[in-house]
Image 1 (spheres, rainbow, N blue to C red):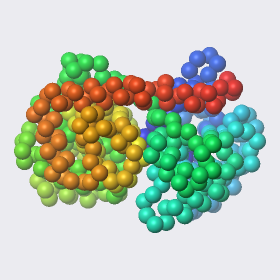
Image 2: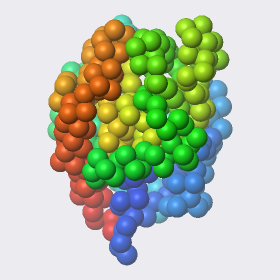
Image 3: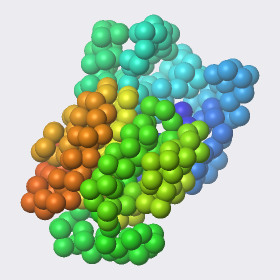
Image 4: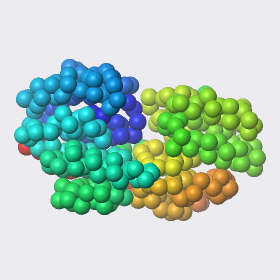
Length: 367
C-alpha cells in the first residue's frame, strides 16, 4: 500500500479488502507499505496482523528502499498476486520482475502543470510495463493515462469506487440528523454546511470559508464544519476570524470516521483545484447530505450532474456557490429531488458490488 491513512483512496482499499475476505474461501492478504503506518493500521490488522511498515527515509524513500524491496520479495513467496494501491513508485519498483499477475489501483489525476506529462510518461514507461492490469476510478483519469501511454489500453480498466448507501427515507434522515447533532454537540436548528479533507492548498478550504461568509450574511442560522488537518490549518483559522466566522465555524481536526458528520449536515460544500473523482462528495451523498462543489480540473462530473444530483461548477465562484446553498436551504422540493437522484446514482453505478466485481474476477483463482 502507498500509505495507510484514512483518506479516500485508503478507505476504498480497506473496503475492497474487506469485501474480498468475506466468506470461508475469501482472499487472504500479506500487507506492507514503504511509509510508516497511519491511522488505518487498525484496518490493516484485520487482514494481516504481521503487516510491516518502513520509515521512508530520504527523497522518495531511497534510503529505506532496499529493506522494503527485500521484504516485498519475501512476501511474494507466499502470494499468488501482487496488488499495489496508490501511485507508489517504491511499491511498483519492488514488484518488478515478480512472476505473478500484478495490478495497480491508480487513484490520482495526471495534469497539474507543464511537467506533468513528462513525470507520468516516465512513471508508466519505467514502472508499469510489466503490470497485468491498471484500474482507474473514473473514465476521466483513464482517458488521461491513455493520452500519455496509449499502450495501456489493453490493460486499463475503469473500476468505480463502491459505497454503502445509508439513506433510506427523508423521515429517517431527519431523525438520524438530530441524533448525530446531539452526539457531536452541533446546533440542532442550524443549517449546517461541512467539508472534510487535508487542509492543503489545492483543496481550497479558503473558498469554503469565503462562501460560508456569504451564506452567513443571508442565512444567519447557518453553521459550518471543517473536518481535517494539514499545513494550512492555522492560516485557515485566522481567515475564519478575519471574515467574521469565528463563532460559526468548527475546526474538528482529523476525524477517523466522518459518517456522523455527514448525517449531521445539510450540505457538503466541496472545493478543489485538482481531483480525480473525490470520495468525500460521494460519501456524503450516501447519507443523504446534499452536495455543492467547485472543481477546476477533475472527474467529479461523472457523479454530479449539475442541478440533477447536486451542484457542480468548474470555477471557484463564491457567489454561485453561496446562491446554490441558499437555494437548497429554501427549496425543500429541489433538495429532495437532488438528494434522491444522487442516492439512486450511487446505488446503480457506485455500489460496493460494482466496486468489487473487477477484483473478485482478477483475484478469483487465489481463493
